[in-house]
Length: 54
Image 1 (tube, rainbow, N blue to C red):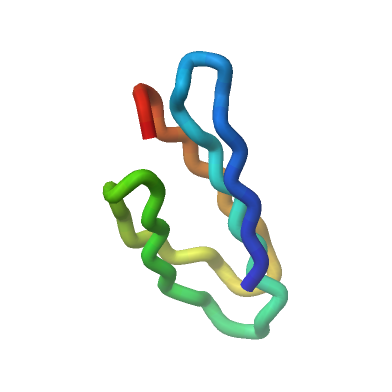
Image 2: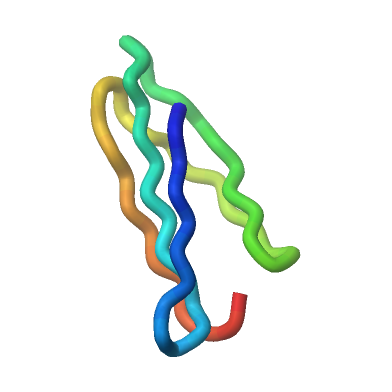
């Protein structure tokens, strides 16, 4: 798994998660004390946007 988190102009954030593995990966993303769990399919990327202050 690889990841990048960027802050947006409105104070939110965008996460990009990359999964180069041959199987799906379930990950917990924590930013600014808030978290969520997502599954990234094998060999793909997932992008999530969180609005508001992170």
